[in-house]
Amino acid sequence: MFSLPLGDGARLAALEVWHAEEFAGHLDRARDHIRPWVGPAFVTDDMEGARATLARYAERQAGDGARLYGIWREDALVGGVMFTDFSAAAGSCEIGCWLEPSAQGHGLITRACGALLDWAFTVRGLHRAEWHCRADNHRSTAVAKRLGMTLEGVRREAWPYEGVRYDTQLWAVLADEWRTRGDEASGVALTQ
Ligand SMILES: CC(C)(COP(=O)(O)OP(=O)(O)OC[C@H]1O[C@@H](n2cnc3c(N)ncnc32)[C@H](O)[C@@H]1OP(=O)(O)O)[C@@H](O)C(=O)NCCC(=O)NCCS
Image (cartoon, rainbow, N blue to C red):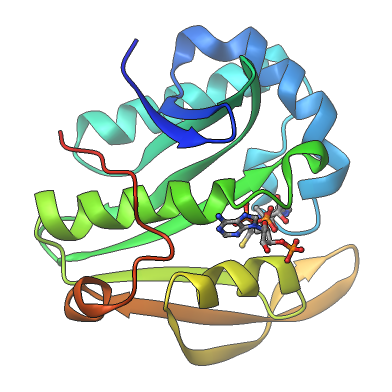
């Protein structure tokens, strides 16, 4: 019902349990593309699994924790962004994202993450936002850079995938850094 325009005919809105069928259909288009890079629990195979993911986020949001948002382009669900962790008490959060292949390359994720960072820092007064990714996920590290994040460290061989352990990177941006940076990722804002 409530959505935020992202430009390019796209919008950002809450992704909720009632979207389960649409989310399952989207995962059919995105599954192979996202599987190496996102947590295995997110890559479900059927409608029941898709619904379980949405229900898990809804429960965590009810406790002021994780939150999930979808990106619709020309009325098709093409990806999304989330607070994979959100702690008002600790003043910190972690942001994640995914897209189906057809939606890559338009800046949708950079703009959507900018909206989440604006909300976390401005509306909720958080101090720090993190970004965790596989070190060889170049599209993901490019988003972190566009968001003005700093590479803070590497967790060596922390990500097991198909029998190989990959390094992961921790990127982060602080509230003051976000406020004083250029406007590349801003331009949209969640106000509530
Ligand atoms: C990570 C992922 C979401 C990044 O998607 P993306 O489309 O590259 O990122 P954005 O939506 O921010 O778009 C950036 C691209 O759009 C271009 N772009 C166009 N207009 C833009 C704008 N106004 N602002 C920023 N970028 C813009 C950029 O130049 C860049 O293009 P490039 O691909 O030629 O470098 C995507 O690759 C994905 O889903 N990967 C698999 C899952 C995954 O890795 N998730 C993250 C786990 S940590």
